[in-house]
Image (cartoon, rainbow over all chains, first blue to last red; front, side):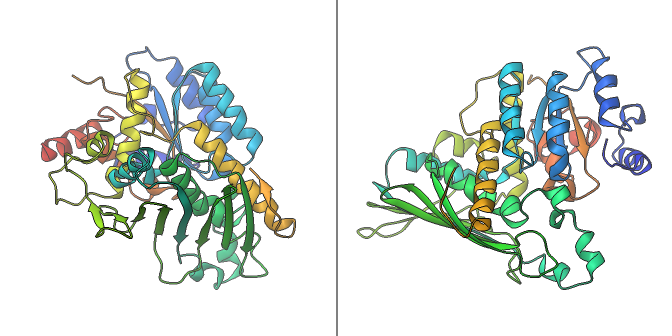
Length: 341
Length: 54
């Protein structure tokens, strides 16, 4: 089922050479028909790539019917929905992968390994930034163009546009690479125009502990920016910096040594980082392979094979993301107060 | 031989994600021997790509 319009869905299926008898009019029909097939030919997992407001209902139905799920982020609209899915996944003992794609990059996995080994010393500062500019041309167009973009409509997008779509990626990368949890947030969000209901830009101060703080900056109105996701983790002994638009280089900085540059496809890397790159060294890979690595981890889990924690974002990462989004929105709407996640 | 996984998909026409902006990621997923018998896109196309990457 590839489109709400059945004819468009059939056309898509034909273009992809998919049998039309497995192209369904509704999710209910998909579940009913596939459940009736013999186990050898029945689908095992479903990838949900719809607007945000549809994730929860579809995921819940699929899990209840015994299917594994791969789901776009943000996972749900509310925290309660996210927690309900987490409980359901545990009860059903099914695989749920959330496509925080950037965790599939080899150098992000290398970053996680370096930090887990304590090579940065005591972490003292964490910064993440995700700047885009694509909404600029939309919000400065006509009203119909604004309402035609589902990400700007709370009914479809949820409580946030910028933080819900890309700020949450920065949040996820921070918790993924450091293994730390953000405890409190204070946000200042900006819808940029009167006729925009959701945030398109914002800054979030982070508190991890008494002596560890950080910041997330995210924007959809930074003209000329594309997918400018960066993360920097500063420690007492060394620091790490990585940028999504140049993903095959991880920089390790120090006050006492020259800068080190980690790259994929070298034996000194962490085994998970090393297995996340398929070509010989010096052949750049990118976002497609990062996404494929998420699916690879999910596939191992679905098959019941051993996999490394961190091979794919889980339903718990989805719960954390929803708590972050709502805490950020609550902080802003309550006069920029600190909110506990 | 690695067990193949059959995957369905909901959405794809609205541009909700990088998957739907272009279906190539799923092709790559399959060429990486991940989901080599997905419902989408076709095994035929995936097999061709897989041979290319060998």
